[in-house]
Image (cartoon, rainbow, N blue to C red):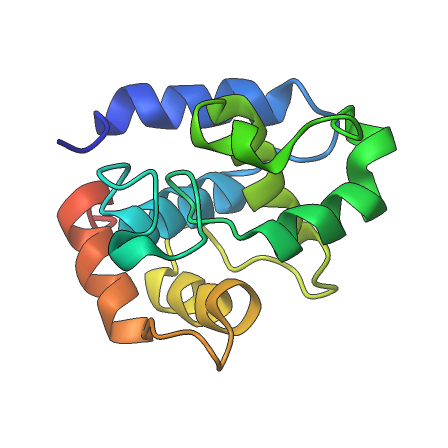
Length: 148
């Protein structure tokens, strides 16, 4: 069973607003879409098939370690362990948001779902990832809903 969209959205908003400079409507839409495509909106907190990724955002250890080295002191997670992101939703939200923050380009507008999908593919899933823009769009529509 996936997360309730409103409750999950509220949780992301609270988490990001508690950290100066991390919240925006674009960040919220991008994280909702990321959870939709990466884990079927929280159905899978461990990567299917025994892979290394954890949390609704399917974060891998090298990504966590890299972001921790760059942002850990500033955002208060320098002493946290990778495995905690499976059960600590606040930490998982933070790390997923920081993965996008390292990109120098502005986030797409929240209603630009195609732009969000392309941004996710380029920054988060990368050319080496198995995901596609089309999959992001389909899962965004299913779990988040398309803008009117």
